[in-house]
Structure formats: C-alpha cells, structure tokens
Image (cartoon, rainbow, N blue to C red; front, side, top):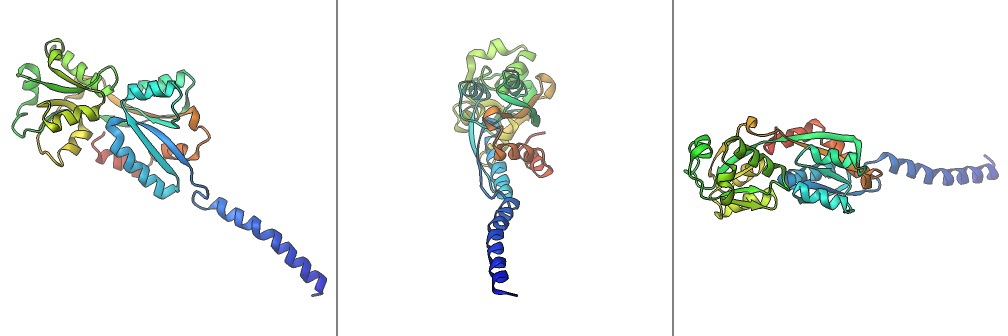
Length: 260
C-alpha cells in the first residue's frame, strides 16, 4: 500500500468513527434520558411511583409523579399545568380533556378498575358491613370530596342507593382526596371510611382493622383511564410510560395493588 493510499484510509476511518458512535448511541437504551411529568389520581399514587421506577430501569427515562384528586388535576391541566400525561381515577375526565383539545384521543385507554371498601382501624368495628351501612349507627364517616374525587362520588352513590345520603351527610368527614380521607380513618379522626381498596390494603400493613367490600352494583364502575396530554405529545418518556402501563408486567403490578 502506498503512503498516499494509507493516509487516505486513515482519513476515511476517522470520518466513519463519529458516525458509528452516533449509531451506537441511537440504538442503545435511552441514549438521552428524558423526564416526563405525570399527573396521577391520589388513589393510584403509590402504584404509579413503583411503576415509574420499574419503567425507568427498563427505559432509562424518568417519570415524575404529581398526585392530587382527579378534579383538582383537571383544573390544573386546564389552567396550563406542565403535565405530560394523566392517570385519572375515572374515565370521564380524560375524555373531557380529549374533547377540549388538551389530550391525544389515540392514547386514551383504561388501566385499572377500582373498588370501594368500608373500613375501620378497629378490628371489631365492621362485623356486618352491609347491615352497618344500611341501618347501623354511624358516628362519623370519612369519604373523599364527591365533587373532586371519583371514589367520593362512588361513596355518595352507594349511600344514595341505601337512601342514607341525606341522613349521614352531617356526619361525613370530607377529605380533599382519597389519601386524606384514608388518613382520617388511620389516625382515628373518623371511626369509619368508604375508601379505595388499594389504600385500605396499604393501611392494613400497620392497622389490621376490619372492613367490607361494597358491592360494585351499588355505584357506577370506577374505571380509571390514562391519556397523553398535548404537552407530552413529543415526549418519548410520557408515551413510553403509557405503553408500559398496558404491558403484562405492569398489569400484574396493578392487580397486586388491589385493582381489578
């Protein structure tokens, strides 16, 4: 090989190496990690954080979870809060955001179905849950605000079904969200609560308590839906996280947290 040809080959290789490095980075796992901010209904906050951590290990991206009642999150999104995706506690709110042009309808999907539980931290308090709700003495009952939280709306529907809403209304202890309502019962501020099964399952780790699952026929199904918001349309972390929620591994985790 002549000296000129050898020099030419070296120059060609020098030009090829940066391209090869770029290609390798593009093919790797999240060469440039991206952060996505996800608004999550309070009942699903703990589950979302664990799912976000699992997705982060798999993808290299980072998911930041902001939790509040669904009604509050809806108001924040409408006022321009910088969220990339929403995991709602109902199906109606994400659909409204799609209709209002604030979310991508192609990404709308159900990710969980919630259940309502009558629960007390007192192991002897709930012996016959149905009889207690139908005609028993209820001193104070904690629920999430029905105007802001779908689980609160389900609690009101259940009491309406039993024709006890107006009777028990003065004795209700309203939480801004289901997390606060659960805390009222855990702390003893309210002896009873109509709460998400997922949060009761968590509370039982420290307080065995006593509970009874409210029949699903007493209220509208608590279908929880997720959607990509307009701000997150070009965010690969947000899109990827919503896809991950539909994976078998994520569904198994969601069931373990107490959801159907």
